[in-house]
Amino acid sequence: MRTTARLVLIAAITFCAAAMLPSAAQALPGPYVTTYADAPGRPRPCLNDTPTCRPVGIVKRGSHLGYCQTTGATVILGGYVSNRWVMTDLGAGRVFIPALYVDNWDLVSMSLPYC
Image 1: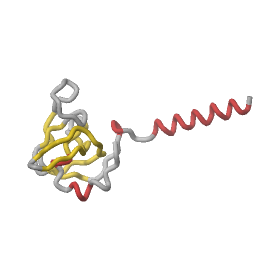
Image 2: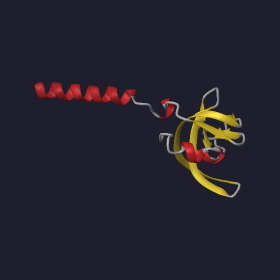
Image 3: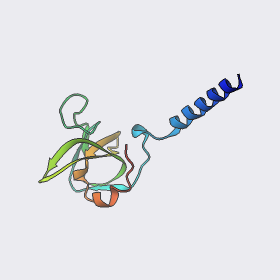
Image 4: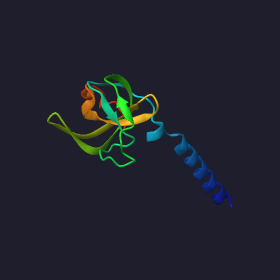
């Protein structure tokens, strides 16, 4: 009986600890990312125009809090190619933008956690 109680306690502690870790939806803010142009903010790192991927707003040119980075659809912009995306804040919610819009990517890519 004691072994079963210990296993239940260990499982409960593990579950609670996992629930407290930040996820992509709760990612903690990281460094500021600077966009050199307005970028379409999408709910996921994708490019198609399905209802779950359509742009939900425009992230204006300037500095924004970066939350995390991930891989997604490949973007070609001005002769550059990348599949990296950055989660940032649109004001009304968090969105993903292609990392190709981030002017200071070399500086922030190493300090942004992965989603």
